[in-house]
Image 1 (tube, rainbow, N blue to C red):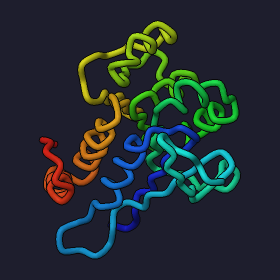
Image 2 (image 1 turned 30 degrees about the vertical axis):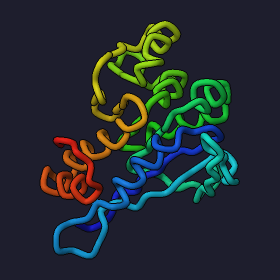
Image 3 (image 1 turned 90 degrees about the vertical axis):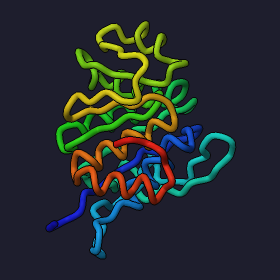
Length: 198
């Protein structure tokens, strides 16, 4: 492998912790058997690069702001109250997500991060899912989205949407399987003691 995949995770106030921490852990832990190099470099971004107050008061210091963040191969958009009730009305965030589409190989939403993708117009005409508590709202507010219920994630090629919270771990393992094969994905899940068939 000549290089790593750069994974960016968007952060914002009231982001659901496991929505971003699950994928962060999965991609950060992933490694090749008998090799020292890591296939993923995982970093975080927020609008201003200042400390973010996640759900239930967890304070997180992002690596980058919108102004100085690099390009990412994989961009993860988590959800939570901050996504569905606050950032969905933040045109700077929506525009930043929209602007990243051209230079990002894969955009992944977790939970109600799908609302931010929908607001940015990135899943119009595509199949998508979100947390079961919010799936009817997604269908109602964004009729151009082909909402899929009762699944962990929906793969539309350059965009993947995942269901609620822990589904971020499932979709991250799925991506690892697609990029690096089943052996690496299964080894990563085993290291996390996560019971999932990838």
